[in-house]
Image (tube, rainbow, N blue to C red):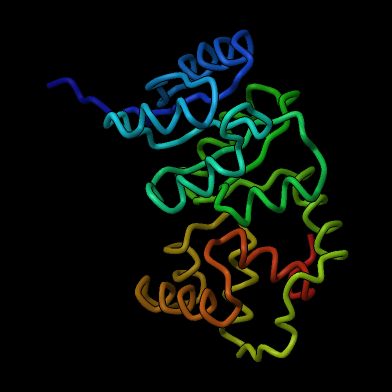
Length: 219
């Protein structure tokens, strides 16, 4: 019997046709990935998803006509939270990067990224639910040092929660974090949900950003 492995389905969304076509061809060469469809902006992406073409990952530009990457990510998070967003953009400012993560993106790459890093990011998003490159991590730190949007300094964390936060900033999955802490996967999930509530965040990236901002971990 021939063993078959289901490929991860990717939607490539970019208003620049040459870039979009080239990116789609590249994704189709990556082991384990296949392009489900291409879309030229957020409006086109929405229409195709609502026609029951639901990808596992959306590769998404930020600056697009009609419906941009911000609104598209917000819509995906609300209506299709199982779809993981990986941003691929020319925009490198910390404000854009932080906003995209807060809206629900799982990773952020610049368009001058090498193909090997794209594969690394795709794998990390599928297996670990987040990808933070060295460049993006530096931008997050810079932006958070200036960020005064929320005050959670009075939140009291116990030792286990702080340890969980430190492990969250690693490449480990939540299951692997539980093993490192010698607790069950269920207990690790309880730590995660408790921290989501305490810190008023909704994703692993939010936990990482809190840990960096409050010096629980240093990158």
